[in-house]
Image 1 (cartoon, rainbow, N blue to C red):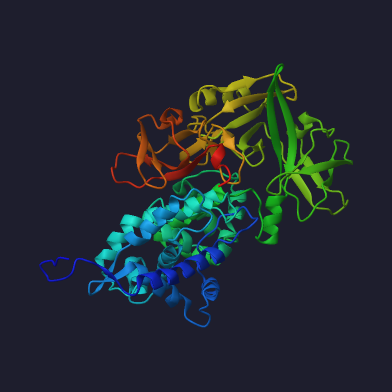
Image 2 (image 1 turned 90 degrees about the vertical axis):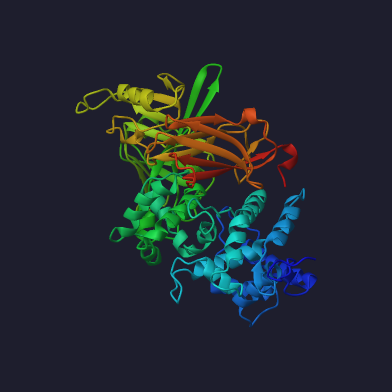
Length: 582
């Protein structure tokens, strides 16, 4: 043992008996897992939301009823990460090594050992903006106080920035490997990369997050859409500032703080990616207006005789239903029909129903419950251009307000154009796709199931906005987009692909001429691949990399700033047959 020039020992000593400290810490760690991440049948995002009642339940799990749960959690974490020298100093290496040992297990059903520490970092994030003698944005001093350190402790910042991302990735990986049984991972930070991780858990409360589907449906955003937070900000701004909006008061107040807007948008982006299309929990009038829509759904099958289209109607019924419905006919009578249940609360008409496909597309569609007069009703207005995006949950193309950058899509276009439109709609759409879509799309004029007077554009992937801005259906909502698609999907609640057939990465940007996409290991952050484009569009196949089973992070960067944060990230999970049921 040697001394430095100040006469201090270089060996850090734990503040209490190591075995006793780890045993106590492990109890709190397991309690955090049991209370915040219990096994559930719901396929929903889960947050480390540490409100007072949640902390009390965690304390009850470790037999600390009646004590201050914040202090109990802080003491447990402090006992394994704060060492004496003789003054306190943070060292996370022991916790990181425990987490790495856990990650090397072949089966990881038990929680990662970093949960209790991460919970304490979230408490510090929740304390931000509460006033006191610290600036509202001061994060590290608040975390230091929870650990009994001085406000300006340099070891805390250095250790946290060195190890925090790995520890949060361990949590995300654990949740991902449970296939949604303990909830969907949500800890992502696109800006303020270190502080942004606990902030992603603490900023927006559960009650506020439950209102996001109202906004998604109101602005025509589709279930599972991957949209960069900066593109969501304009919708959020309109939603929270509009009079009589369904946005909750707490979210309105948070939005008034410019520093919070990007973080709120990041949380909304995660919620949108995991949204199944259901709308619930809003004011009755808002929810009823959004649920009363009917939409076109299309399955396309290729056979010996060419393409075959199966066109149906989908609705999200109010309350519990039996599937017995009625549809309004052209002679103004109500015809009984049966709807079959799908996933995420979406019901669709059967292919055997005697509904004329052409009138389904060209006329006003009205569907109601079989209760008769006064029953809830669902409507679909006719459109001359119908954009359809592939919905993985429904295994079908579902009608949306407009196309999405990089997504697999189709277009149904009516060949008979109103006289007030100068050019034929089909010609205009074909020209727009030739300009803005990925080469390889096809126009189908005849196919089984395709109504007379309509053409189908299939294999559509939009890579930019067309010059003809009057084609609203082809003007994408997002300006910058990272899409993971293709490959062989493995049936699971959390998206996974076969290692033998990984997906491709599609990136498009409208605001810059330079984009860069990186692929790194989720566990080690080792850079595995990098692609650069000067044409605002990039498509990268992962086949040539011969990737092993594992979890990978794809990041999209724009512009030429070397240390810029990514504008969007996504996780790719590759599995072989032996790892499908971890």
